[in-house]
Image 1 (cartoon, rainbow, N blue to C red):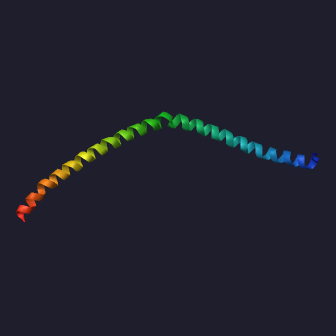
Image 2 (cartoon, one colour):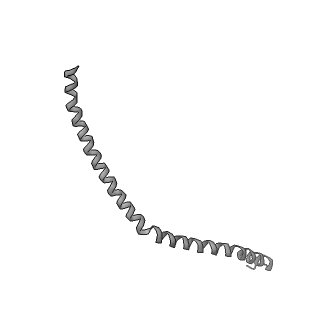
Image 3 (tube, rainbow, N blue to C red):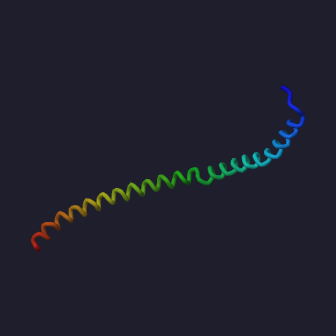
Length: 84
């Protein structure tokens, strides 16, 4: 199958117009990935581990306070019945 010179010429011009922006986009993506890896890699994981630890501590405190509150309610209920 032969192609005419006009179609090849037009395809070449289109490729030349698209190539520089595509190369620029690829370069920008590469740079952004590099910066993201440098900036957020270990830092983000460290924060996540710290946040999970803080969350576990808060959940533990909440469970203790819930238990204490329930115990207090059980002790208060008989007192309310006596004073009523």
